Amino acid sequence: MVTPSPTSPVSPAARGGRRDNDQNLRAPVKKSRCPRLRRKEPLQPLNPCPLPGDSGVCDLFESPSSGSDGADSPGSSVARGCSPLTGLAQPLTPLDLQTFRDYGQSCYAFRKAQESHFHPRESLARQPQVTAESRCKLLSWLIPVHRQFGLSFESLCLTVNTLDRFLTTTPVAADCFQLLGVTSLLIACKQVEVHPPRVKQLLALCCGAFSRQQLCNLECIVLHKLHFSLGAPTISFFLEHFTHTRLEAGQAEVSEALEAQVLARAVAELSLADYAFTSYTPSLLAICCLALADRMLRLPRPVDLHLGEHPEEALQDCLGKLQMLVAINSTSLTHMLPLQICEKCSLSPSLQ
Image 1 (cartoon, rainbow, N blue to C red):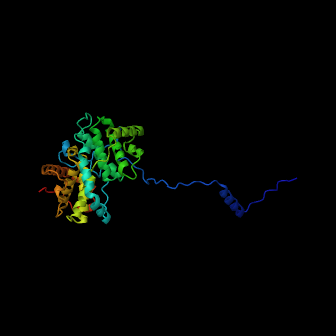
Image 2 (image 1 turned 90 degrees about the horizontal axis):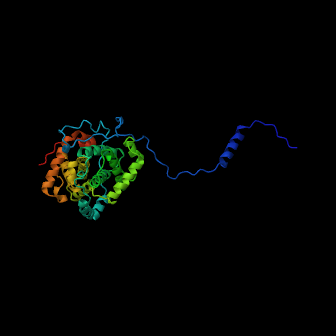
Image 3 (image 1 turned 30 degrees about the vertical axis):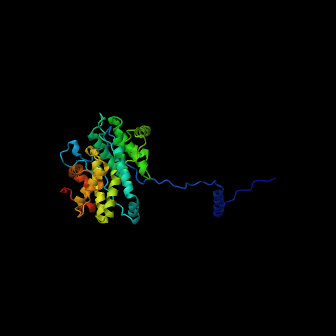
């Protein structure tokens, strides 16, 4: 007859061996090959303390076409949490210049021919509830949003193009206008960004005013109204092309051309929020922003205005409006630029 033996104290070494055996008997756990990278800090809305019923949209830029008196906006980029442009443009490599020599002119001719097809004209003509002021208010909110996500200038240009083209096709209610803005941003980011923002992040910026289903439904509507034709020529493309052209012709040093491109991009951001500039094509706006940037930086050899083959009257008209826009938004512009460019540029350039 077998009887159980009395229990005896177990030594630490025996306990350690038993623990090792238990671990060896456990089922293997499959580890993820691509661990998910999460943000260290949660993405907060740009307006941290919205009013009751406020969806987070705030004023940022002043528009000369909206009846402003020429004073700086009280809601400057610093007060509204607008982050400045980080650093200068990336230095051009020999491969970039060689690629431009091989394909630059053919790409420019192709994109230039597409301008008239993708350029929206009088986008607010069929909008009884959306005005130029509300458009300026929305875009002056979207510009810091795109910068907060670290998105490219190309994404911002495509966002504005998608927004304006949809407005030419469909009347939009005032309470859905912000939803259209974030939907346009999402569509643009899916085209050019490696990591586009998530839907829940965009909805969080709207302070929960819209649902995920509403955004997805509007995305489908926008795509169908635009017939999935989304690859519009942008100011960003033409700015880069004209910068490469002047460098290839030896009309500017590399550092000067890159600084002018950064400043021209900031001026172009201001113009995107102003409805008065929707009448100008992207190539015209790009060459005028670059020419104004050259004069603000006092470069000895400014860019040739006739690179875009535009009439002299249209060039001078666009330059005059851009100069007024810079004068009105001088405070916002300085906070959008790196310090080394702010110290060099003049906010009252001469057009002569």
